[in-house]
Amino acid sequence: MEKIIKYIEKFLICGVLIALSFMLLFAFVDIVYEIHKTLVTPPIFVIESARLMDLFSLFLILLIGLELLETIKAYLKNDVVHVELVILVAIIAISRKVIVWDFSKNSHSELISLSVMILALGLTYFLVKRAGVKFKIKKGIENKE
Image (cartoon, rainbow, N blue to C red):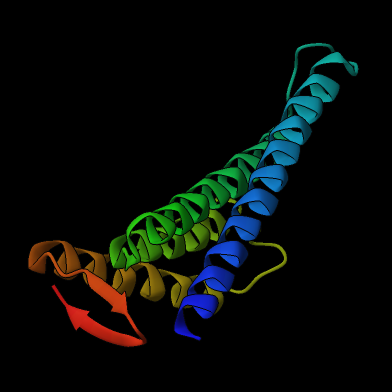
């Protein structure tokens, strides 16, 4: 029974990898299309700052997706959850929000809360890297390596 569950788990992880890969491919095509569309609309070869921030946001979303893909691949390969990769994805996601921050729509207190989250995640990442801790998932039990 345990072998069947392991096969189902591997099948689902492969399915998630394939689906995420397609999503990232389409996201990349969307980025190329948006850049092309921006460059050919008048004024030609000029990107306004607001549009540039939108393009940066698309790039950062693609980067988050790539990090998620890397995390899933690492888990599929050796059944190890790389905690530092998960923390990096969170840092990139919150940093993306800060980079494309619109002060006219959001309050300063929200920006401060995002800053505190980035600081906490940065400290967590530092401590995890310094400790060199990875968690190996084996038969539903977490073991420190």
